[in-house]
Length: 405
Ligand code: NDP
Ligand code: MG
Image (cartoon, rainbow, N blue to C red):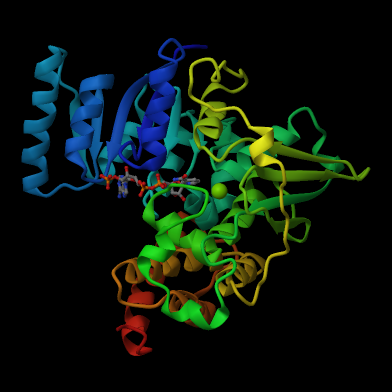
């Protein structure tokens, strides 16, 4: 039923802002009930003014943030003469936004590793989940999918590759799938001489050839860790074993992924690289809305797209991809240790403290040390413990391995 009432976690980020573009374009279909972010109060205030949510959650909860939130969000309310939204803070605020009774659908667009508990709470509250944050499924895919199955709740992918796979699989019998083939652009360093990779700059890593995204996923796309995480995400979303999930480089980012069936037929999903389409698809499913006529999505220009290219992925060039596949094979707490270590390694790289190739070195060192504490069937507390252990171990190892500049 429409309008669908939405809680948007991570509203000030790249996916969050594009989700609000979709809502703005289709006000008769979508209504924003709750917004949540970390600490960007100036943008939150603009969003409050425009969308008039009933609840705003702010993860940061220092006295200064609380005071500033009261001031700026009340001011935003005053201009529009609407009732002020309720303010909530910390993890409790995210949980409240994710479980608000009047919410139908929770869009999970926070970066980092904070979304696991809000997602589990939203599932238990019976909310449909539109999931952009892949880290949640990498950490605890078995628990999230099992909880969703039990609660009868749908987990709808926003990640473009998974949206593509989902679109290709509609109306198909899952038993007839031979392979999932995820596409990857290859990032900014697809052709960089191997000897230069150790000295690339942060600015070069952030200059993605086809997508504009937040900093963490952009660095993950430069190391191809992102594609490794997406293999794990696809495994959980579509319950396809790892040996039947492959990756191919598609530098133009026009083909977003493919499904090969047992008869040899391959379906591909194509569109210009823009997240508006996968976001819209998750929000409006099972409807497809007229996005072209409203100017939200540009049509493919066949003359411009004239030639598509495909290449195999070079695992030597991208050790992070190999580490992700190895963690996936180990299963249990390994993928969680992988994303925990990656979170810290990427933060150190973005701060200019380690080089690009040190990211994989650091993650590998953390995974080697994980052996003694690894668990095969972790519950949520074990997952959260692994997450925090991996982050801390990565920070400690960065100092002791001498990779820090
Ligand atoms: P951004 O860095 O642009 O935005 C992150 C958002 O999360 C911001 O709104 C930020 O708030 C919020 N946030 C961060 N930490 C917390 C926290 N502890 N509590 C509450 N909110 C928090 O990231 P992206 O939008 O690029 O990515 C978001 C997720 O979507 C990632 O998991 C990414 O992998 C995934 N994704 C993104 C794609 C893209 O095109 N951008 C494509 C596919 C997947 P604040 O602004 O206040 O700091
Ligand atoms: Mg993706």
